[in-house]
Length: 349
Image (cartoon, rainbow, N blue to C red; front, top):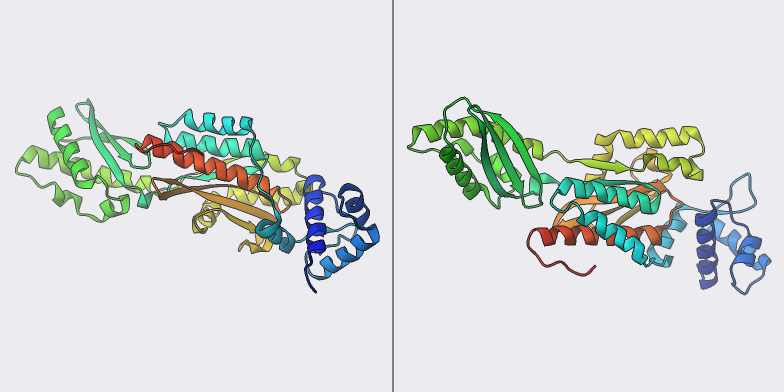
């Protein structure tokens, strides 16, 4: 059976109506609300064909039809129209992201919050896969006779401050010399590369005090880098599902909440997704618990390097055109924000 132009128009109308109302759609509804120039009887016959082809399903309690996962996939691939964001929405995104440009983690967290507020869905943001994050600057700051703060700054903007307990005498000059050596040796190297190096041998010196200080600092430096490898997942708008008709069923809502609160498992799923804008619908999701969900993720970059992912999860009945436009604009701004901070020219987005 051929998917004709008329069938496509009817299917597009059904998807649009169902996304707005969450109510099964009948032929008379399509005839009244959409000027397709054909009778309800013709629409009804075409809908029967679309159901036979697998694009519509027929709930037992209703005479209307609802789109299948296959219909949503066709819609995302070929039928949906991207929505142009309003000036107000663009301003909200730009202002929230730029307000904490010097605090990388805060900016990412705010990005997830903005996405949830605009879409009214559960949103998330994954911070960099830090094993590929390169080091930019290392400093050692004296606090007292036995305490030093180790500051590590990565090229992505991540800053780690760790208090170290020093068991040997030191001077501020020794600290600065060691910090400069560390920066010189490891600037531009990824965290995973540094962790593979024999860093104690790298700092062998004829100055006994310097060598002893290095031996005190290096194990903590290694542990700090290992901690920086941990990926952070920020999630916002979990309770938004209670405003979505699909989750009026408390058992279904509970399963959704349980899935997202198992953060390690959900983080792994996000890390495994490909780069770029990825939309998976219903049974396209590998995990059975996500078979009635749609998951949209997009990547953000710094100077062309993949940094992290951001997106939304919700029911398959989703405003795909609008949401993908919002996520695209958000990730473009996120990438441009940190490109500017790292010294590049901010592009118009």
